[in-house]
Image 1 (cartoon, protein in one colour):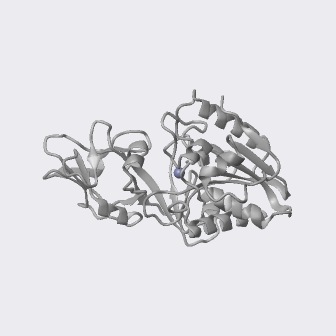
Image 2: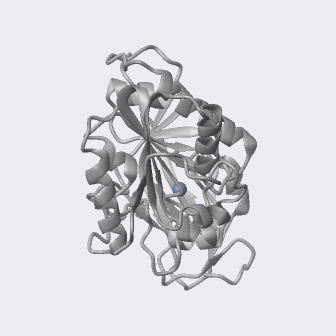
Image 3: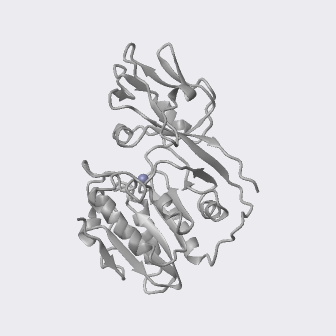
Length: 338
Ligand SMILES: [Zn+2]
């Protein structure tokens, strides 16, 4: 069983550490930090569900520094997640399930990690929550954006306080924001690449805004937002090798695609070159888990091309991330009635 530390004051040293690698010297295990504020309904914030994504840790550090010796405007509960992986600067350790896939309804529900998350959920949802924010980074070149799992006014409003770009998704299951959605408006924020000051500033500003927000408007306020729906998750089946450099790999991926995150690509856009006779292809899963490769791509002259206009997100050049998670998502724009 993974221990869960529960504390009610900021531990000594937490505000001074400069690297997520050192967090284990302050918090040796996953930790729930609960701080009382003027408004009792807590804001729930999770950081380091992915150990190499440190922006959340530093945003929380900034908030706690700002209110050092003061009472917070609103109660705050922070969950510090995969501290072991943070020590190694990895998304997760080999052999661990992904800390952002084991929330209720997700995968590996028999694992120690899922058991840990069940205990976290039990503690956190014991009182009514004001809102929930899960802070992430990604590896590719992406704008800042918020992800929600419901198109309700409060969820859209919450996400719009972070960024103009909003992504609505139903899969993967077992992510924090999906698990919290029945309890309060919940959002996953993607703050660009780890450790960059701008991402940390923006995440801290967002948390502070929520600490000060008295209530949600409960109706859609007019905000200039772009909302996209994640239609497909593109992975590379284990059976095929892939590379951005090695033209002998089964799939030779095009590195310039990284520049296309959040821009609409026309039909015919080339994604990869296929080694002749390898029969290599992507898997393109929709929300029902069906492989829709043939509906969205075609192969011509050993090249995989888009069949219809789509917008990619989270395209990464990190081959380890591609194997552990996915190559990218493909999205389409949705119109929100105002
Ligand atoms: Zn992440």
